[in-house]
Length: 74
Picture 1 (cartoon, rainbow, N blue to C red):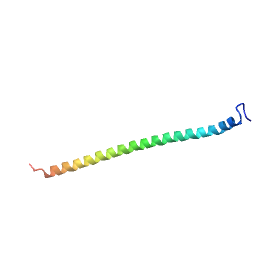
Picture 2: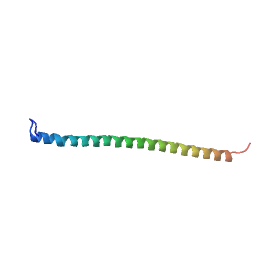
Picture 3: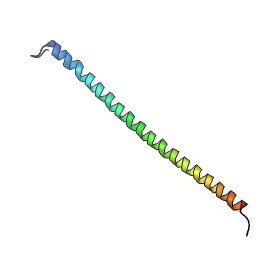
Picture 4: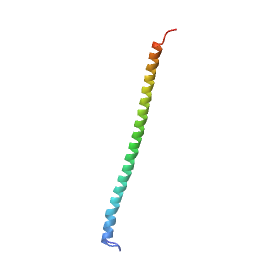
């Protein structure tokens, strides 16, 4: 039954609310997806930094071992 605003206003409200809810959910989903991407990017950066540091320590250890092995004995 139409209210004082008319049939088209009722139709607009009936269709508009679910569409607005769907848009809100999509927006929230996009924010969640961006948050997940941000978290994964941060994790990947941390893992890369850790891997690079570990590789540098390994190279330093090997270089130190070679230096001590080739140094003249006293």
